[in-house]
Image (tube, rainbow over all chains, first blue to last red; front, top):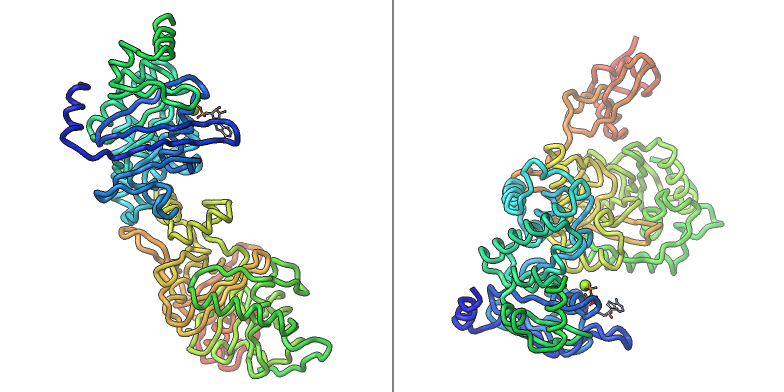
Length: 267
Length: 307
Ligand SMILES: Nc1ncnc2c1ncn2[C@@H]1O[C@H](COP(=O)(O)OP(=O)(O)OP(=O)(O)O)[C@@H](O)[C@H]1O
Ligand SMILES: [Mg+2]
């Protein structure tokens, strides 16, 4: 699978996302520092590391939510790279709603809790100018079905859903405008193991089927193994190792990665 | 028409000239950017905020000795609020006042647009309790400003979507949001959605004042005003199965009126001046006789004779 992906990447010479020496400081504290990488269309990149290593910080900068202290994020749009924090804010906000989406660790951050499931999914279509109720509703039903939420739940509010359903609803909301890139921050965090497994299966199918690129933050190496092509290992805000997921996990080079993988084996 | 005397203890129009200039500058800006909310330095008025002080300040800044003023509240000229605002302007400006829509040069209103189509040269001044149509979606003022600046109006359609999903139609019946000049989403104030189509392409100038929220906005004459809707759920207005019980109008907005304590009720024009005018012209609704007997309406010349 990974080799096939590498081959695909060669056929597609332009990365969709490039991070260059991305640094985010919170006063004296380092959020992340000097992170550089490229992501190609259809590729799934994992970011792993212990709590506080800067994963969420990195993701928020990449997604345009937080402005980095230094460095650059380049996104390929209309066949040319644009620098995410050099473009006007309205353009960036528009891209955030159409070209990429973010699945938050806490569904409350990514959903409108007082709006029905159908409205949550349909909002992104209305944002981009869709004005046909019947078509919006049909698209919402289609996406709810794809994330295994029954059509009969379309008019329920997220608070009437279980944690796993809320997470799936969030995923449907992010994917409905058919973005080219998604960011996911611990998409299976806080869920039961069995629910996690189903969600992972679903994510894998969706990401592969749609051919969208993804950056997935997790501290669960099993999740990384299942979903990602390539892996970055972060420690104290910096990337200490990166490579193809199988290689990094099976033959870690950096001492910290060795510790991380052995900790999982021991557990 | 009524011509009172200006109380010399007050500056003409109550506000000082400096304040009037400030309000007029905000008005000019508002007219230049249809539907855009312009901040202004709202003054204390001899009425509590929330009682139409925004509209009153606009009227005060515009009114001149040659004007004729009409004041309505919920469509009626004779409600307490309308009467006290009219008296206020009689006292501080001495201008003529009227109940006839066609005779007025300035009409200050709360909750209605007169039934009689307004003409070029007239000014309709709305009292605005809540100027921000996006407030229910977004509590932050900084954020709603960005949403307007960049025309991010998807969320407004989510509200309509939710209504249709739940009730099969858009349940909002007043303060129904509109798109002005194809650009800004605007709150039409709590008028019934029945009145929304009157705003579109209106020959008169429409001005909106929110005293508490310190905002002024405007619709210049002959400007496009469209109520938000979906292609497959087009905007519609309320309709009634029967005409006005007093004047038999079937093209006006009707209020329900309880006539006795045995469940008796009738539907009558909310625009009292329109209704009276029709009765004066000989139109007779099927409850007119009863209403006159109850002294709910005075006997109008040309109306039906009651025994
Ligand atoms: N808003 C903030 N203000 C100050 N410091 C912050 C802020 N957000 C994160 N940090 C700091 O930045 C560092 C990286 O935090 P971050 O949330 O990115 O870690 P993480 O890898 O996502 O951790 P976790 O696995 O627990 O979610 C930490 O030291 C954290 O305390
Ligand atoms: Mg985190």
